[in-house]
Length: 380
Ligand SMILES: NC(=O)c1ccc[n+]([C@@H]2O[C@H](COP(=O)([O-])OP(=O)(O)OC[C@H]3O[C@@H](n4cnc5c(N)ncnc54)[C@H](O)[C@@H]3O)[C@@H](O)[C@H]2O)c1
Image 1: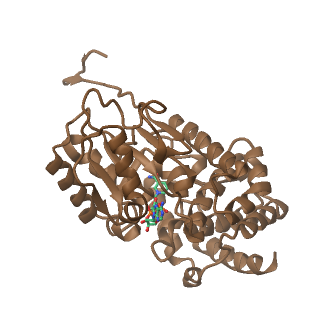
Image 2 (image 1 turned 135 degrees about the vertical axis):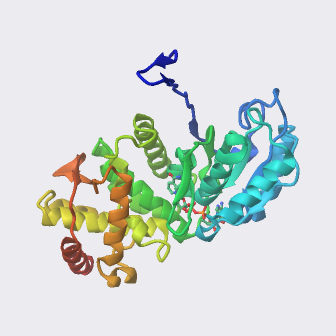
Image 3 (image 1 turned 135 degrees about the horizontal axis):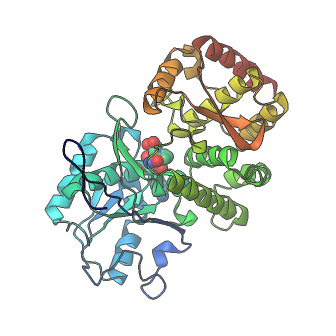
């Protein structure tokens, strides 16, 4: 659009196209330039790439990652190796990556940084990439279930600064690749990803997404989302596709009512005492209790979902909830400051597939929800 003249000056207006992709690529570490020529972007423009890798991933797969880079004739220096885990989601880790980019001399447009790791690596390295030279591209190689079904292709990148994800930007990886064979396989890691999968199963416009998870999710979790489990793969693919559609429709959250916010309005008040995935599930459970109290959903639907959470091995209670509604209420207040002053807590509108948004949740209502959850968690 041309610059227009206003009463007191001029107005400019631009739109910026953003493309990003997400792919499940079985055999990722064995890929060859013939099979997947664009794995590291266009190497004919520049073959140089800075590699940033989670320390656990480097320990387990470092030699195979380096062999993969060699097969593609990527020119790289020693990778920047940083610790994952919530405690690393800070300015110090970000600065380390920025120094790595400066030391390597990452070019502004044609040398996407290659990031290997989970959601924390995505968020911190993605944030560093958003700042460096006012934004350089990066490509994400997601190695946890959670990063594969959510963080790895998210637009949002962030650091925690006194509060979870307080400092951040919108800067998606230009491409995300994942391979279930690479996932961190401990049960605790799988549970983290399963929490985000369940979030989408409840938020999805198609109730069949939850039906499928109800039937196959508990086994998929028990098997650690094994690479050879077709149901696990189907769940991962469905979640990625649904979330990509969700993000594309409202990329910068201008509309603060978003289905996929389920489990994310109160959870920051529980972190970092509990992990992100656990906090999301506890938030979902409290949301269900409040919605039942308001007669937005039936006890039958609530109990069906609670049963799936139990069968999946996700938490139904945590000591952090013994602190009462105070921290959760403070998180709700903060959430409202993020959503045009409204809490806008999504929940099923009577049935799966339809969503309504709850407002004006009070401390007394939260107290009742905590009581109900405690009772339900032990009764079902
Ligand atoms: N940007 C977003 O929109 C978005 C969405 C969802 C979650 N997140 C963020 O994601 C983060 C959680 O991500 P996460 O659960 O992947 O945590 P993480 O990245 O810290 O990984 C968890 C642990 O697994 C280790 N690890 C990673 N890959 C491994 C592998 N293949 N084998 C063995 N160990 C491995 C890491 O070193 C770390 O200790 C949270 O900070 C959350 O806020 C962001």
